[in-house]
Length: 197
Image 1 (cartoon, one colour):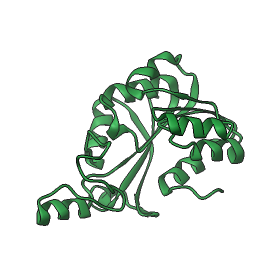
Image 2 (cartoon, helix red, strand yellow):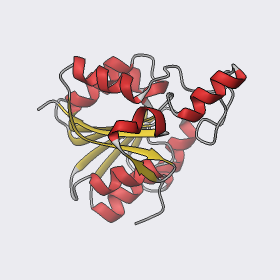
Image 3 (cartoon, helix red, strand yellow):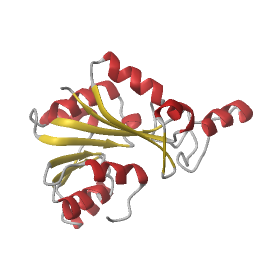
Image 4 (cartoon, one colour):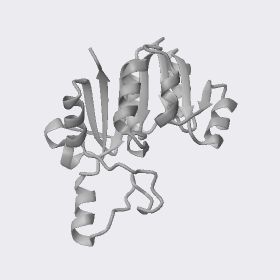
């Protein structure tokens, strides 16, 4: 399989071959390309950045310019087997509404996000008293696209309150998997596979 960021690699490995996929916030289309070429999926993408959209189109990918907060409403119910939102939830204005739309248009949804309760983030706040700049959160607070800082525990409570089923969850530190019991403290990233059934 093509070299992917660790959370994207996990998603790619767990998308069933030959399925219909929408990647919301698809960036340069790297995941879509792998799903199309190596998993024989029918892929579509939505990306807010026009430069990334142009790059995707240049790779022969079906990607439109759109905003997850506004434009998911235009897709019909159940249009995809999987809707993917990788490292994008925390950048949306209304994550709750975006999640509802994902689970409306996709039978299942993959959601990945940085865990702001990771021990390095906590330590940086405790000792330095400032918002951290780390390998995975590489920009200062005033430059970051992240507007909603969430933790693994926050997300678990969020889906439970809404009756959303967690089919599977993976927790990563770098490219290493972490156990569920230590995820809120030890995981840098979380990946959830969700459904309404």
